[in-house]
Length: 324
Image (cartoon, rainbow, N blue to C red):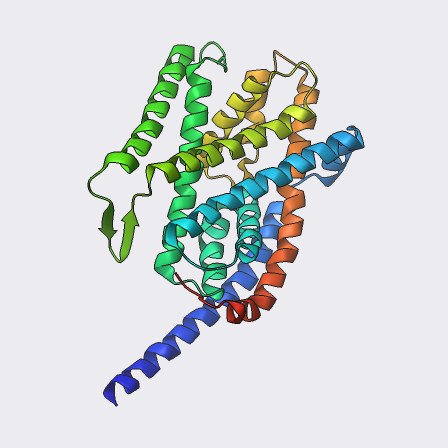
């Protein structure tokens, strides 16, 4: 009897916590979207897109869709890694929504909070969600280390004179990045200790085969993002240079913590590529890239998010094994 009495206040607090979290999302997300979208010059976006042939925009949007699907594979790898039984048809739209919100708002809302909320509503427990999320983060940055390390080490990006790092320094950084990525795979292959306990969470090394798949999938996604910008640039644009500049600007955006990297992406591209092509062409391509890769998916993701919120209970009850 005493256990039952003690569980009632705990259940009541849990219901209050879930209600407060729901209220937070339904208030915070519209507010964050408003502040983010009000700073966009929609006439500029529309003008930039009108200057491109329709076939090119369709191709760029197709590459963007492929990139989003590639990112969804991060969590599908997490599904394999944890062994949870949520259907793939539920995981893909969930991750699509989180990625679009992550890109346009910030990692805390889209990457963390929204992922935990939607997964938990579909029946996954917190430890399983944490393991899926951690594997997704590692997949993204292991792919980045492999790809950026190779691009920098091979000298595919030439820094302007006066930059503190310098071209030699950038090459050395690239070598160090490749070494770090190799060390991760070696640890997955040969480490005798496979798991660590951090508070209530267990961190477990994946197999070396899964680590290699992580590297390939993560690198592919970064590569596809650069393809979109490259397609929108003039014909003389050199893809490896575009890729390298995107990789530099992405890490700069993470460091500055600016949602969607507003201003950072443009500054890095103009600084590093303005001697290779007109500034107007660069700006048009970057505006088009933001519209195709950030804004259009955000509109779709908002609709998908509302559907997920509405159908979450039905989808959860349809899962035969709801947690990991």
